[in-house]
Image: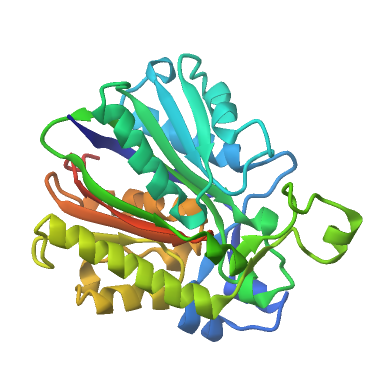
Length: 329
């Protein structure tokens, strides 16, 4: 028994923050941003009382409609996010309540940009063991809630968005293999310093901007490329995949230079690498499912697909799946 993806969906809020908008906020310009990140715009969730769960609900509603699945049929919802609505309860439970999924249990996974990958791998195990039959995996982040729009090193990169897939049992295709890794020493280079038990919120943490995302770009860049390339190579070797037999590579949309570096080190053709960072920026846990959503019409049943990601922590890994269906309008 394998866990197969039977549907994919995504949601990004309507408000768009362009590079030209950012030119008015920090010392930067469109050419500089595009040449270094590949990003032209990002979507921002606005409105009083709006939070990550609201984007997730929109994505899941579309997903359930596409797969003709009733919320009451769901067994489990896993939401990967670093921007939960609240520290507790978990956002997945909030999503379940909002969509009327009253017969399932739900929980969050926090693995930063690797979150969706980790959640997909975890959800697949519930299917493979026969424990559950309908599992929704969500990757979503409202990064605008933890970004300092006076810091040009981070504010140009991140956007808001959500993506989701439905996992169901199957035999022919589905999740085949995965390699997941972590190195806690990486927390020094990519983190949000305050708001946890180590450094609770205080006037001092607010005054020092410790509630915003921080990253040491050079270290993160090198580690991300090394991590994604390493696990992808290992996964391809042990599953006898070649660049010819691998139909699609789906990398985390962190930075166009990272994406290109991964493809180059794998000697993998760029026209088979999913890229949509220009439209959304880095939506953290949302990038992989949003890629699958945007490329869904190009995917064919039986395609060999590898998803790979790298995130704060450090966390990273790669997952190999065989696509389960042909696209239908």
